[in-house]
Picture 1 (cartoon, helix red, strand yellow):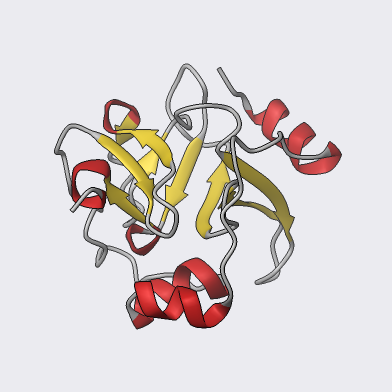
Picture 2: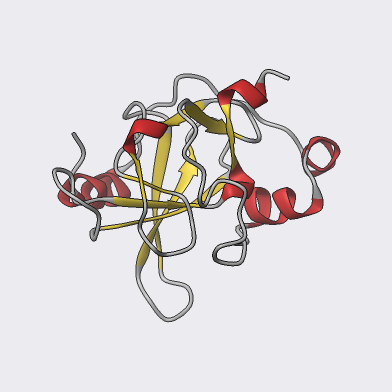
Length: 151
C-alpha cells in the first residue's frame, strides 16, 4: 500500500516503468477526446468542482484512463472527499500512475498522470482516509468507467 512518503520518494527519485506506452500527437488526441477532455487530460487543465461525471458516482467497477484505456482505479477505493472531484485512496497497481512535483498556483503539490500515455489526471494529497492517508483527487474528464471504455 502506498503512503505519502512513498509518493514523495517516487516523485523525487523517478517513476516506475509503465506496463506499456501509448503515444499520439495532439491531432490524434483531439480526434478521440472532447474539447474539455483534451484540455484537462492533454493540457493539464481542471474541471470545475462538483461538475464532473464521476464526482458523485457510486457504480461498482474499474476506472480507466480516458485517453489510453489503461485501468487506473477500483471503485471500491473511491470515497466522498467533499472536494468536488472523484477521490481514491490507491491506484489499481503501482506502475499505472506517475508522480510529478508541481509548484504551480503558488503551492507545492504532486501531480498524477497516467504512466502509460502521460494524461493529466489530477493531484494526490496526504489528507485521505486510513489506512493509506492518500487522496487521489482526479478529474472526471480524464477517466472513464471501464465498461464504458469498451463501447
